[in-house]
Amino acid sequence: MSASATRSRSRSAARLAAVQALYQQEMESVPIPQLLHEFHHHRLGATIDGVEYADAEIDFFDDLVKGVDARREELDGLIAANLAKDWSLDRLDKPMRQILRAGAYELVARADVATGSAISEYVDVAKAFYDQREASFVNALLDKVARTVRG
Image (cartoon, rainbow, N blue to C red; front, side):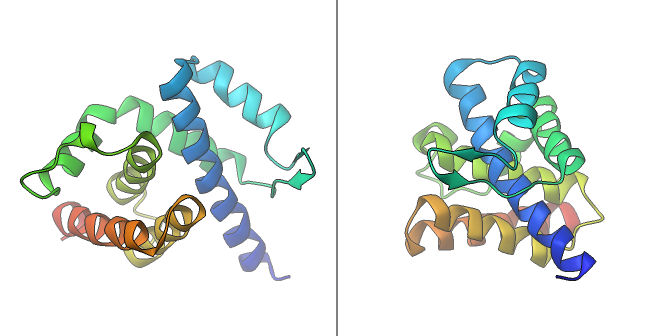
């Protein structure tokens, strides 16, 4: 596997793990340093219940988790502004909120990641949890966020 393919795979794993970590944080109010420690030492690259978790780019994972946590209010505002008029952020289920927050964070704060790549990656994350309908929703909403923050 080439270096760029390995990096791409490790970033994909970091995105999925970040969404899982953010979900856990919201559900259990785990402090971010404790959450990062748990993922570093017990999840990323580990085999749990016979399921092998891919190695993730640790710095990228940490940036996503810390960045979403630090900028949650800003990200929630961007997401809410791009929802249909009869929808609110609270109406979205918790995993969906984390997917959208992480995707919006990348679009806002990670200029090193191409817009199409960021959106496509979170569509793939959505497919790990949802059907095509919800994945299409993620695509449409993150596209709107990208137009707002990246022009």
